[in-house]
Amino acid sequence: GWREPVNLGCAPTGPNSALDEQGPSYVEVESRKLLYFSSGPDIYVSQKVDGSFGPASPVAELNTAASDIQPNVRKDGLEIVFASNRRAGTDQDLYAATRATVTEPFSEPVDLGDAVNTTTASETRPSLSWDGTQLLFGRAPGPEGSTDIYIATRDRLT
Image 1 (cartoon, rainbow, N blue to C red):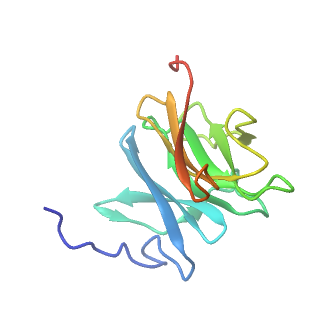
Image 2: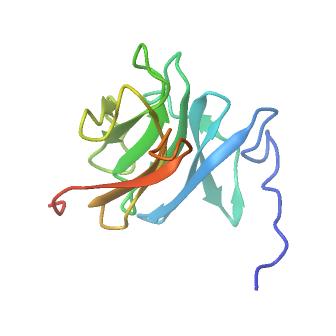
C-alpha cells in the first residue's frame, strides 16, 4: 500500500511556496529528475538532487500575464502541454511547447487549435500518453453540463 505522504518543503529549500501548487508532472531523463507544476498563475520546475527537490524556478518562456497552469511533460521531457487563459475571450485552452533537448528552453507555446480547443468550453488538466500520441484532458461544460474527459490523438512521433 501507499505510505503516508511527505511534504516536499517550502522555499528556500523546497519547491512549495505560499501560493497554491498543483498539477505536478515528474520526468526523469538524461539523469535529470524534474518536477514541473503550477504555482499561482505560473509554471515552475524543481530539480531533484541528492534525494530532495530543491527550490522551484519559474519556466519563464512558458509564463505570461495570463494564468498558465497544470503542466504535463511528455516522458522524454521534450514537450509540455498546459492550460492557459492567454487567448482573449476564453476561459482555459490547451497549449504546447517543445524543445530539442532537456537542457534547452521550451519553444514559444502554441494554442492546440480548433481540433482540441473550443470557444464555448474550458479545456484543462492535460495529460500526454507515454508515447505522446494521445492527449487526455477535461472539458467543461461537457454534454451533461459538468466536466467530462476527452481524448485527442495524433500520429506517432518520429
